[in-house]
Image (cartoon, rainbow, N blue to C red; front, side, top):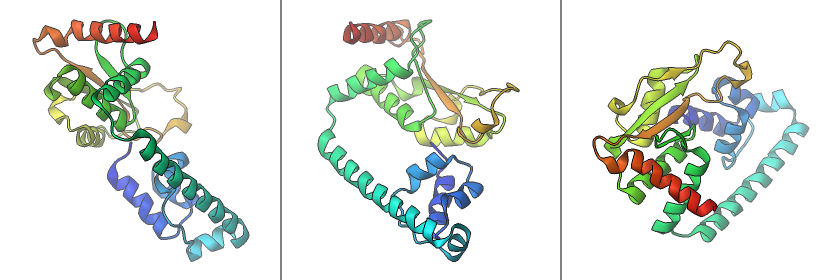
Length: 221
């Protein structure tokens, strides 16, 4: 969900022995994101961390980190065994499930909205494999906040999705004054709204949306 340089900086600081509290001051992400990125990075506290946190408290933290890392490694190995290779039908049904949760269901517009590029990338794969949609028919509009850099966000999403920057609409910026400050930095690259354009082919216009809705009605009946 984040620019590669930001993630790499967090990894480098962790390898240098810095705590999450230190890293979060230098990397613009939430602690929960750091935890996801760094859970399997070996942690040997440096002198600064030892002096700041204290040996007893740190020993407890390192132990918990190692226990969590082993548990996550075990879960990942089990997931690989459980999931195996996805069939075309697996992809079709998983994509439909994502659309049920994140897709547009009104006004006959086929779109998926999410802040996680993995979801958007899978949606692209789904549209291509399940319906024969061409990537050139996919457009993205970013929903951003004043603390987002629009140029960096477009570059990030284009790199992640492989959708050319000329297929991005003008971004919308949420300028609500009552936006909680605690939400700042949680979405450093905003939210992507990806829509499918017909480009003159009726099968990918209103009919595509109706077809997806029919699938949804069929599985949820």
